[in-house]
Length: 185
Image 1 (tube, one colour):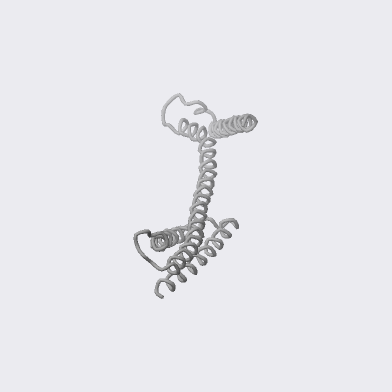
Image 2 (image 1 turned 90 degrees about the vertical axis):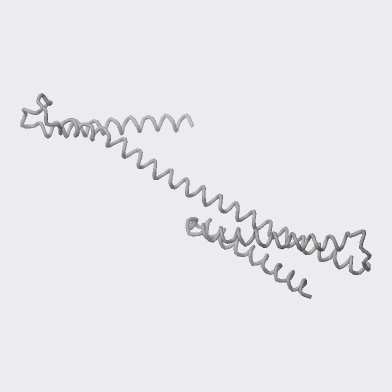
């Protein structure tokens, strides 16, 4: 009787696991992938644990059903076969939930990587745009003789214009390069 109640508990656990994967999958598809990451890990652990337990039970009932060296009444063998079939269906359900949880974890990782790539792209663009301006301000900030525009009253404004022009030209070159690469790709 303990085996039957154990199997019934595992059947309910397998169904609950499937429903929990459904809920997490809905959250991921609604755009809450980052919050669902911890839940997916817990679901995968639960699925692996259930999968191991069911595999052991399934092996036990298969041996009862198919054991040629042991003389068992035919009704016991038939009951073992029915139990093995039921355990096989529960095992398949758990395996399916386990695979879905793995795919969800891959989806969350892919979305996280895409978001990181977008942020790095923006950071790279800002760095490229401000690099020439930084170079110009560093050049004009030196305290040496012979700097361009040093004797002019408009020297500060001319240096600002050079810095902005350098940044704008880098931005335009990057925009043209991106258009060419998007046309080719």
